[in-house]
Length: 292
Image (cartoon, rainbow, N blue to C red; front, side, top):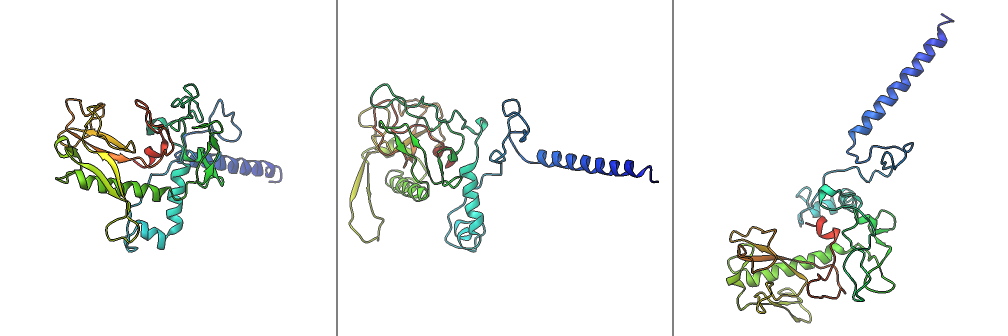
């Protein structure tokens, strides 16, 4: 028995090692990681992700509610489970999107729109695969961030991300008010006939709200100059649709034969950009993708 004891101990340790290795490999494969490597692998030969950012969890869209009894709604998350609500939003900002998601890498690549000097190119925000690539101060908390080569010799800082949702809500409210003016039959899009003779004039205050009221003229819903676009402020991004209100992806203007009208989104980000014909006022952006 004494002679076999070292063999028994060796076999026991070998079994423990095999069990640990096998369970570790199975556990790793159970994660939805995009990069299979570990800390011992050369990242050039075997991509690795020690941060866990490439592990995917389902994207969640939180519905705005005012009743905390509606589980999963925004008020429920604020009053019942604020930590879960925070982590859902945090996960979205830290997620690394993939090419099959429609957003991909080349972070910081300077081949975006040409700046007004006619030579320098803007850093295209389409060349990132995560919100956290720019909004990373404090680290991994969706705050402010680095200086970008954009609209000026010294560029500009990445603005703080907190409060962006409120700005988007303003954009959504402007859209609803504009649609209420032009979408006469309330079918969710504006036909060429509905657009005739209507201007997008919106108050800075909602009905019933006290304060200094100002009317803001965003232009005409109609294409008065014949350029194929509604004569609205460039913050209104038109989406051309057919007679059933379905988007026509290949349509470039209202002059396309299949186009019966349009709907639009209010692009609230990208302020301070000079609008030049044939060049959009803001470059492609990950934000438009994540909020879609």
